Length: 158
Image (cartoon, one colour):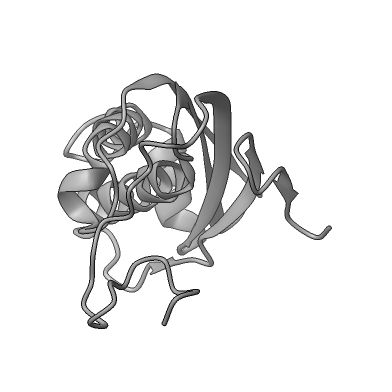
């Protein structure tokens, strides 16, 4: 089990000790998709969802979730984030695309924070729109890029 970093010598879960790592600038970008009926996407774009501005609320949810990732994911280190940017796009018919980029200068990466951000945004879209449509689908959710740290950069598809 020596090569499994989140297990101790007894095979039990642990939070990895990062105290000897170098502080570097780190970024991560994640994305997800919410698939829905065209009329639901139209309601979002036209601001006609009864609970309010879906994209504005989802953006705030994403930022809040990124900041609280270590409260959700047991082995994540609490991080001081230096930036969180969330954007939305759509295909004009039935898919809403959510992307989040998270930044820090620290000892460990922000991949989980970016993934948590887009997940929280997508769940917020679902929550705000479920009265219009309960059959929305979330995903795939994936890491697009990661920079910084000992393991180097990652770009989806490389």
